[in-house]
Amino acid sequence: MADKKDNKATATYIPRPELGDTFADGVAGFVFDGQSRTLRLEFTARRYHAQEGTQEAAVTTTPVSRIVLSQDAIAALVNAVNATSESLVKAGVLQRRESASNAEGTSALN
Image (cartoon, rainbow, N blue to C red; front, side):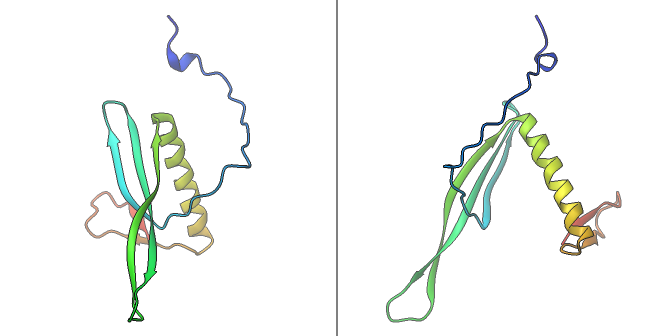
């Protein structure tokens, strides 16, 4: 029997212009399932609600999307985030900050 990794067919991308965007301003869940080797992400958005008799708004956070990524999709996401981070550092949008507690000398982004 052929190994799954030896049998990678080229997938054709089919665009879906009717698929809408989902805005999120937070991540509430970030869980890796070692058994199924998937990563589950839950994105959230803050909602502001006017309150009668006060100028202060009530704020709630609500889930807006849940995504489950396969092992290959996790690798693709990590690579895309790393490449984007490097581009943002080069453009001056993000800055590297050295972590004093990190003995390996790697840095975090700010």
